[in-house]
Image 1 (cartoon, rainbow, N blue to C red):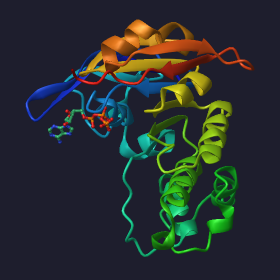
Image 2 (cartoon, protein in one colour):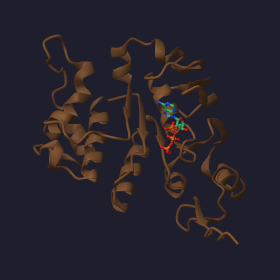
Image 3 (cartoon, protein in one colour):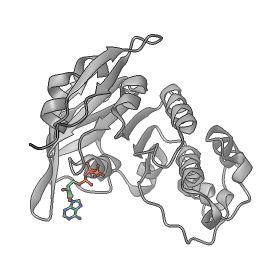
Length: 256
Ligand SMILES: Nc1ncnc2c1ncn2[C@@H]1O[C@H](COP(=O)(O)OP(=O)(O)OP(=O)(O)O)[C@@H](O)[C@H]1O
């Protein structure tokens, strides 16, 4: 799905926390949304999902403004996996994943594709958890189930807010490889710059609500950008197998 951010911005608490972002994440690929804490990543994902109306500019999907799409149409096309999930809902994992099918249900509550939930559970490697109570899962297991719920929605645009949170290293690598290979336009907020460098086709770097840089990780994740945006020193190496950038951070200098 073609996605265009056209000067999009909004204020929260009277301050422009996303301020005039122009960007075109490549269709069918994984784009990393990077930037320090508070840079505006979650707010931008909510704007892209149509959950927050922009105060200026627009988010366009296939040339239609997202916040003007009818709710059901938006829910079929766009899935957002948010950062926090409540732990107390009295549902099984299968029931949580079935929530992703709500936009497809008929008036009588029947799903035209009753295998979609099972497919999503298998894709997210969560099928072994299907009958467990949601409230009994670990943080990493919950993250997989949330991914399954988003996949069950069969979105054309997948938005993930720190999807590797709580996941062990093997699960982080397999999740990002899986998402990269889906062929779905995906924007994922990521804190781990080495994961972004390894898996993303494109990165957007936010700083204080503005777009500081955009492009292929090789062109964007440079020492001067990391210094300017994150205030860190680093050398950029080349991955011996993939040729992708590997960021070797320096220890921070101690205050004198
Ligand atoms: N409801 C709100 N009211 C006022 N300010 C808000 C609100 N929500 C977020 N903010 C502020 O907006 C800015 C951007 O927040 P946002 O959560 O989008 O950043 P982020 O890049 O996702 O941060 P993190 O990496 O810490 O998750 C922050 O300064 C935050 O304090």
